[in-house]
Amino acid sequence: MKRLITVLAVSIFLLSSTTLAFAQDDSSEYPSKCDVAGDILWVRPIGVIQTAFGAVAYVISLPVTIPLNKKEEAKKFLITFPYNYYFKRPLGEM
Image 1 (cartoon, rainbow, N blue to C red):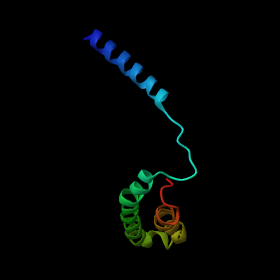
Image 2: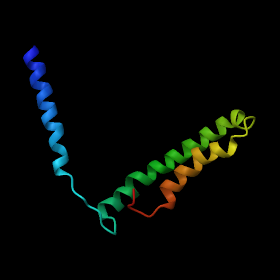
Image 3: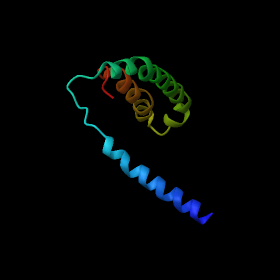
């Protein structure tokens, strides 16, 4: 049992240390077609859902945020920031 744990620990260490060797710098001026397609088909719909949940959470939090004068902070955090991230940025830039 001790030998099995040692072999597993060494193999995990070796596998985790070699993954950085395959990293590539893919910085270009324009996003790739895959990035744009993933943004349109996956990230933006998630943004719609997250912004909708943020709006619902904002309305639910109003009884607490109004007496504390934190209504604008809650609005920025729950609605404005997700909206700006998902819908105001150029396609493909994540």
